[in-house]
Length: 67
Image 1 (cartoon, one colour):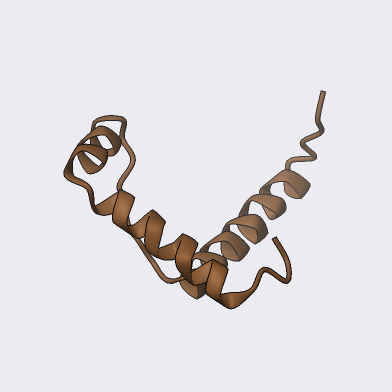
Image 2: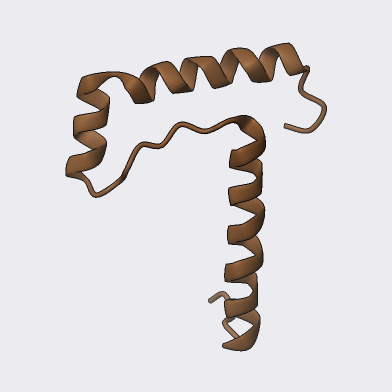
């Protein structure tokens, strides 16, 4: 959430990275077609921003509406 203290963000990030690096979790994700790729919080924010822009453009261009 917005305004989450940096120390909390760092703690959550470290916990998520630890989980994604666990062999059993990696294997499960890979078997389901997902590729675990831990990144920094800034990199993840950029990925989300880029994806929102990309898919927002597709939705607008194709006039996709919710049901």
